[in-house]
Length: 94
Image 1: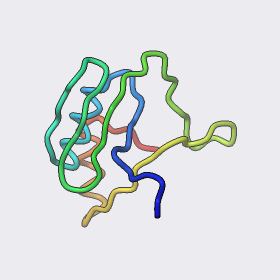
Image 2: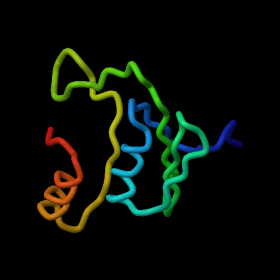
Image 3: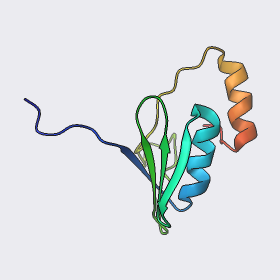
């Protein structure tokens, strides 16, 4: 029997609402903001939450000196089309 169940995947960010809105444009779902420092994206699949971390230093990748720290694996039917869409939403290429 497991000790716990997964409730939510939480991403630290200096701008929780902006990052939740970005992922909403990609994944769909509904953005809810129960507190200034906490935003949730609810929809099909795993719930994502975005927690304010004002002093967060984003990881650099690829870099032998810094790890990726965290990433989401997303499936898309057309990689080139998806890439142009997420770049238009503000994603940065690796």
